[in-house]
Each structure stands twice: as C-alpha cells, then as structure tokens.
Image (tube, rainbow, N blue to C red; front, side):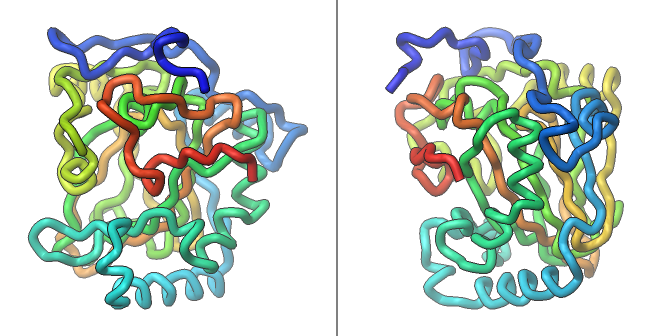
Length: 297
C-alpha cells in the first residue's frame, strides 16, 4: 500500500502556526455528459458551485419504506448499543447510524441503486467504492447543529484520502425547510482547501461525531469565505437528493422546530483515490467511518 511517506501531501493540515488556504489541484468533475445521467449543463453547475440538487430521486413509496426502517432502527436496543450509533450529547436521541450500506438491507439497496451509483461514477470518472454511509436524524426541538467544515479535511487527515475526488449524496427522507436545520453550503468553496491548526487527538472521532474539535476551520477564514462565496440554504421535498463535493464548506443549524429532518447519506470515493495511511492522525478511524475495503461496487 502507498503511504504518506511516499506520497506527496498536497493538502497539509492539523499543523502548528496559522491556518492556510490551499488551491485545489484536481478537477471536480472527471466524467462527461455521455457517461451518465447528468447533462453537460448540470456537470458545469456542479464544477462551479460544488453541489447539485436532484428533485424526486426516489419515489414516495421508497421514502416511506426507508422512513419506517429509520423509525425501527431508532428504537432497536441492539442498534442503540452498537458502536456505529451516535446519540445526541444532551437528549440521548439517535443522531446518526453509520455503515448502513453493510448492516441494513433497505439502505444497502439504495446505496447500490443505479440512480445513485451511476451519478457518482459519472462525476468521479471511474469505478467507485463506498467510503462511508449513514442515516442521520435531526429530531424536532432537540436536533443539534453541525458547525462549518469540509468533509475532505477529516477524510484526508484521519482516513488517509489523498485528494478530494469523492462525492457525497444526501437523500431527504423528510421535507427540508429553511428553518429545520437544512444543509448550508458556501458555493464555490470546494475550489479551496482550508488547512486547520492543531494536532489530532487520539481517538478524536469519539468526540468529533457529536461536537467538532480538531479540524475546525479558523473563524476569520470562514468569514472571508462567506463574504466571497455566500451561503446557499438547500431546501427541498422528501425524496429529493443533494450531491456535493467532498471539499465543500458546509454546516447545518440546530432544529428547534417540531419538524424533524432525516436523510440517508452515502459517500462515494474513486477507486483511483483510495485511502492510504492517515496524513495527520495517529491511526485510521474505524472502518465504519472510513472504509478500508476499496473494492469497486
């Protein structure tokens, strides 16, 4: 296996000193309009903004099937006791359940569905594997916020992902309003990498999945990004989906409304961008957070 000792680290992070902003080296879109369901216009928009929304990716019946399974999982004692389940720090309600593409047949089916996989292959221009999957709960009144971050910063530092040649898809199982904690993205921010300050603690994932610590971007840099790129609030109906680049700066507010926000979240990585040893952590995170099996699906 190639390791960081023989691979140039193009996106250095978790260092002492001042935060840095590094220009992205690789493209966002590797495929073409004739290699998948997205049109040339849509691929151009993804290259520019870092994200695309797909209304009605799945049917209402499929939404109901997945929502029912979500409710069942949130009440299953074995699931609640599993290390792959993360709960809210105060309410103890379920926040996320990881690796659902391997542990659950309902979510395995959507993770391997051509409507999802062919889009990932088209954007990344290669075969893909699932780096991470999870179902997210943001229950009404108690769903907590998630601060601004780039997923790639964590996947690079702690999982050993060499470059941001990965794409995430979030499939909405509830309506996303502007007020129930929807995804927010700084459009265009994916073209620059924010290098964060501070070493990665041992087993950082145990805390960061509930409240971010290491890998938190500098607030002055975030303010500059917001001034330059703006902030898009991604609303939409259940059954729709958002695909977004791994280096998009994104966040979500807490949910104090009565209306829950739940989604299925799947990360596809190019097999040509398979993870090596971590670039800025003592050891890789557990396999359910960053897959070490890079066989294409």
